[in-house]
Every structure is written in structure tokens, then in C-alpha cells.
Length: 151
Image (tube, rainbow, N blue to C red):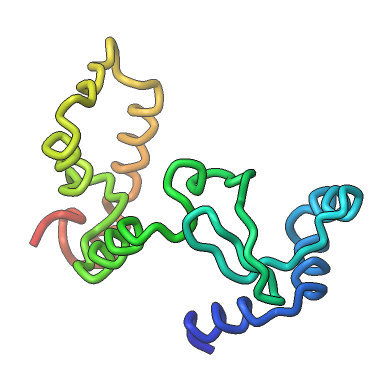
């Protein structure tokens, strides 16, 4: 089953199945608290600060948790930015190269403070160096190249 099919299947779960699975695998206390406070609605759509339940009733999300606080649910600019980045197939979270999108924040948010320079190397650096040296023979044996970054 493809990831798209898995997502569609997850989104088609009944409210009772979703609650049961959430209680069993994610956070049973959360489900108990929802039931205790009478929050038994099944919201199936969100846009801006509006939520819609499975019967089509619209309510305003006054709790608006996490990212929805400042932007609303499914903000079109956020969706467009995510789609653009995913279509570009840009590398993400590399530890061996500067990230163009992170660096470009200096252009789009020039008032952001510069990153502080560390007063000394983090204590994890020697461990990483040792781990890098230990993996070099394995890299050469696996790839036939002297290092990961060599052509």
C-alpha cells in the first residue's frame, strides 16, 4: 500500500476507531480527558480558525493549538511553501553541507539576530570525530571510495 493510500485510509477512520487507536497507541489520558470534559465531537475539516464536524457544523477554534495559533489551520501560504519545497526535491537536514533554505532566511528575515559563536567546541565533537574515523574503513569497503564525499 502506498503512503497516499495509507493517509487516505487513516483519514477515513471512523471517530470511534480513531479514539480507540489513539487511546491504545498514542495517549490514553488525552482520550479520557476529552470524554471527561464532554469533547466528543469528530472534526473532519479545518481551515483558518474554523473547524467542521462530521455533520458539517462549523465552529471557531478558540483553542487553536500549536501552529494554528498564529496562522490558522491549513494556511494557503504555508501549504504553497511546503508544496514548492517538496517539488524542488531539495535536501533537508544534512550535516555535511549548508542548507540553502535555512541560509536564505537571512534574506527574508534580515532583522533576525546572527547565530552566536560558541566559546568552545561542543563536547560531542570529539565523539563525532571518532565515529567518523571508525566509519571510514566501512565506507571505503562498501563504496570503493576513500570517503563519503569523494567522487
